[in-house]
Image (cartoon, rainbow, N blue to C red):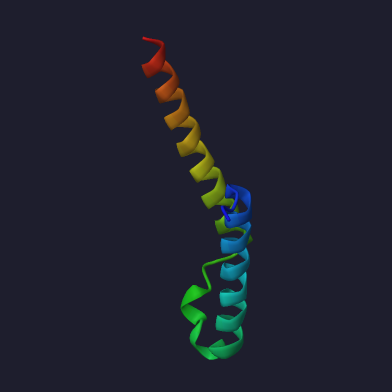
Length: 66
């Protein structure tokens, strides 16, 4: 049985969330080096990644237009 792409992505996401929860519960005192991960840094990362994808798509558009 072949799985659809969205189902596969959802499964990977759920596995990643479960692994993060297990990691957080088991090694509580050793996660101080991950303190830079907060909502602002995540938002900046998402915006930067979106900007990179946008620039790449514009580049591909102009490349295919010629």
